[in-house]
Length: 91
Image 1 (spheres, rainbow, N blue to C red):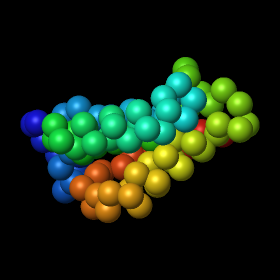
Image 2 (image 1 turned 180 degrees about the vertical axis):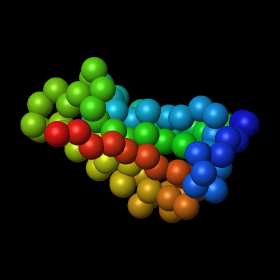
Image 3 (image 1 turned 60 degrees about the vertical axis):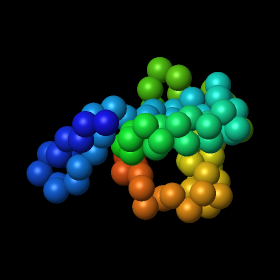
Image 4 (image 1 turned 90 degrees about the vertical axis):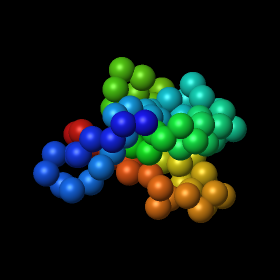
């Protein structure tokens, strides 16, 4: 996977980014973990966990699930250091 410099940060990220906004709403935790494994196995280490796109959390009960699923995967695999994680906030 080709890498690109992220602005002037000195951080190098994969050209492709894994979007996790559907984790917990449309994508089960098991399937989310499989996607994260596959992404890293193919060199995609730039991930975006923002839940602010057209598939916003569908309910109060699922809000924050993407972050929870990511945290569970990081804890299980110990691979947090391999990922450049981005997010956004809107109000």
